[in-house]
Length: 230
Ligand code: ATP
Image (cartoon, rainbow, N blue to C red; front, side, top):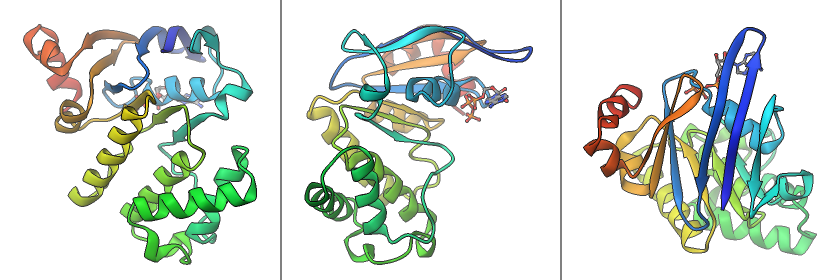
């Protein structure tokens, strides 16, 4: 179980998170929804140790996240973090090495994920030469090369064409089948509905509704869901 528990975060007078809590079971997919500026990225950055919570904690298998556990999280940031001049294959190997794989395992993982996400023919190309959609695939591959135990993805589908969406969706479902909990933020309700076992809606610094998309639709939260996921 991946648990976000009572997260508080303010930037000056801006109280962004006011007790955010939700849990994602191993092998399930959680859609993290909310209007622009609701605090989804902030919540994810806290899990990754890129922002510090004023209070609360995130736990994986009951243990508060520390640097060692965070190395086992695959993260796809919203502001994509690729090196434009580096070749696709080198980049993926580099991320795998960062997460502790030895050189041979890193090279194998890079090759596997490049193929798996349809980037096989682009392995020797510099990232900056790729279309936005392909760069996004590289970013996802970078999150997957280290065989993460947990996946946290910030708007991974934004900007992808339908083929890109399908290959990303399939890769994420496969991760779930392998027991990985997947959290992703999105404004695309159709995708959230198609992929997620559960959904949480962030508003006013809290999770104001959670459940399956179907449950939320049935309840009053359906109205809220339509508001925050246009
Ligand atoms: P979006 O859907 O637009 O990506 P979001 O739900 O991810 O939005 P956040 O990016 O977490 O929202 O931002 C939540 C609030 O926190 C916003 O008001 C934002 O301006 C503020 N914020 C985020 N990071 C910082 C920072 N480093 N310094 C100051 N304010 C910040």
